[in-house]
Amino acid sequence: MKKLFIETLGCAMNVRDSEHMIAELNQKESYELTTNADDADLIIINTCSVREKPVSKLFSELGQFKKVRKSGAKIGVAGCTASHLGEDIIKRAPYVDFVIGARNVSKITEVIDKKHSIEIDTSYDESTYMFGEFRSNSLKAMVNISIGCDKQCSFCIVPITRGEEISIPSNLIVQEVKKAVDSGAKEVTLLGQNVNNYGRRFSSSDSGAKNFTELLREVSKIDGLERIRFSSPHPLHMDNEFLEEFASNPKICKQIHVPLQSGSTRLLKEMKRGYTKEWFLDRCEKIKKLVPNVAISTDIIVGFPGESEEDFEDTLDVLERVRFDALFSFKYSARPHTAAAEYIEQVDAAVASKRLQKLQARHKEIQKEIMDAQIGSSVEVLFEELKSDGKVAGRSDEGRLIMVDGSEELLDKILNVKIIKANITVLHGVI
Ligand code: 5AD
Ligand code: SF4
Image 1 (cartoon, rainbow, N blue to C red):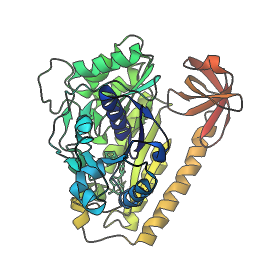
Image 2 (image 1 turned 180 degrees about the horizontal axis):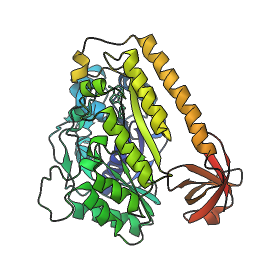
Image 3 (image 1 turned 60 degrees about the vertical axis):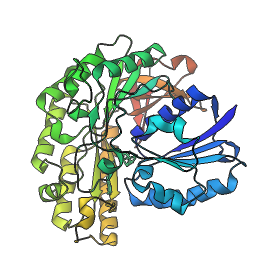
Image 4 (image 1 turned 135 degrees about the vertical axis):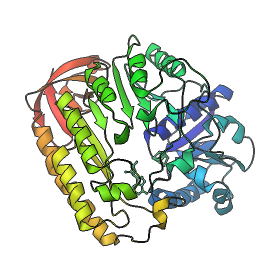
């Protein structure tokens, strides 16, 4: 049997794309997955291009693969960097056998057989393609609900690498979720670049759900499915109807990612995010009012062109007021073909680093307080992993990591746990 090494960088969408590639390849010929590149007949690196660093790392990594690969082994570059660099990858690294973009995943079985083939058409429509079945986690499934992204956030390269947004018809989504549930999944994460913009455009007619709230209702009717998560929504499209469904539907986990990017209304405008600081705060307040123990996570960029001390203070102010459960924070990185890359008022790198440090330090304090406040509470936990020290790990409805003493009979079960101890990343409890 041939061996496949696949490295996945970037977001959950990429993780699912890798699963799709594995499934498609296996439909043609059986592959065994390996974690050693030097052992593989086929090496694929599924790339991310959202920030510059991983892109520059790509070529040094490719050089490594070239050195260690078995004779005759093929090397392919997939994902977002494949989409936007295309044939430049082969020009710079001619030993790369194929390049397959983030919007062309279904063509994997074609490209592996054609030396130097490049499939990076970002208008290619995979929204109704039925991929083969492969899931790395049978308990927790990922299901795509849309491809591409129609937003034009001025810092973001994704619309260029993944093309325009097309929603997957809801009957196909429901079919996918049912398949996953039939093979043991209890939880599903609905995936898209902008999930709550669902229904904006379909490429074929479907009489099912027309917007994200309706889709959530449809999916939640599936018997045997216990938990629904989604990633990622956009603050702009968080209307009351959606938030009320989020709050009242018992299958929807009470964890929500609300990507802020900046707390400054002036900068949000420059970023072309479409909302103000006040709108963002209002949505978070509404979420907390509807679901008091909700876990809200966010993404923040510091050092966006033109960010003043005052703009950054606005970001800190939002951090203080919302008190996020989790923060993913980044220094702005100029990306090719994006509007912000042309903005001239770049922020000094040392200033941006200082701001990032300050933001992360304050967030850590808040996070500790949030975790400590969980002591004494009871949460529903889906147990997933047996640890070596007699502990079993799982996630609460709110997505928090929970550990209890126990053995494998807890695995795959949803049980009520009382929290007795907390640290910054883990809550310890008893059943
Ligand atoms: N520079 C820094 N961070 C970025 N992100 C997207 N584009 C950039 C960029 N050019 C961040 C945003 C987004 C997350 C996935 O990555 O915060 O929400
Ligand atoms: Fe990276 Fe964005 Fe592409 Fe995901 S969609 S792999 S985060 S660039």
